[in-house]
Amino acid sequence: MSGIERKILDFACGAFNRYHDMTGGGWLSETHESFLQNFVAIEISDALDRYVGVDESPNRIINASEGERRGKPRNDGNKRFDIVVWSTNKKANKKGGKKSYQVMSLIEVKKSHSGVAYSALEKDAAKITDFAKNKVVNVKSGYLLVYIEWSKFGDNRRLKNQINKWVNKVKGNKMPLVGSKQMDHHWYDEDNDKTWWCGFMLIRVFKK
Image (cartoon, rainbow, N blue to C red; front, side, top):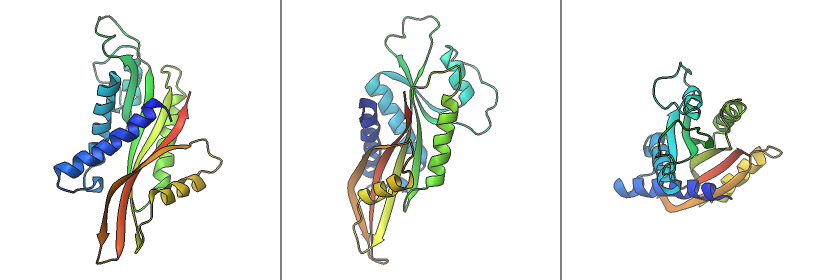
């Protein structure tokens, strides 16, 4: 697991802990996916001293790769990338002049309740790989960051079970699970005799 991969997972856990603390015990399933998305984006930008975009369209990425950060690009429909990590160092870029930007990572963020929504992951993975084939912007890597909550009657099933499901689902696939984190928090639903757990998986779509 590379440095940025560890940081993505660490910052995802930080997002959970921040939301849990500020709400007095809330889990990320209670809020919009954008909370996790924006928290991770800000932390990556600060920690790596890189420009990071949120909800950037393919056309905006292409414009930015040519040093054009202003203006509205032509309509891309509903296609957006959750997090775009640029290779450009912010400090080195303060000297002025037209800059050339390249993409370090495209990251799609997903929340899944009671297991993994494989069809949604496959759709996001295809969006990343399709854009990475473009001839204008050099995209170095792509990831799926997945937050999951799961339960089982009378059993504290661990994140490993969900990981095994992913591995079995994509056996022979070129998208490895590069890391996972299970949160310490869990709660018991007495009415339904369920113990709930939560955690994160990081899936590498591709890396050059």
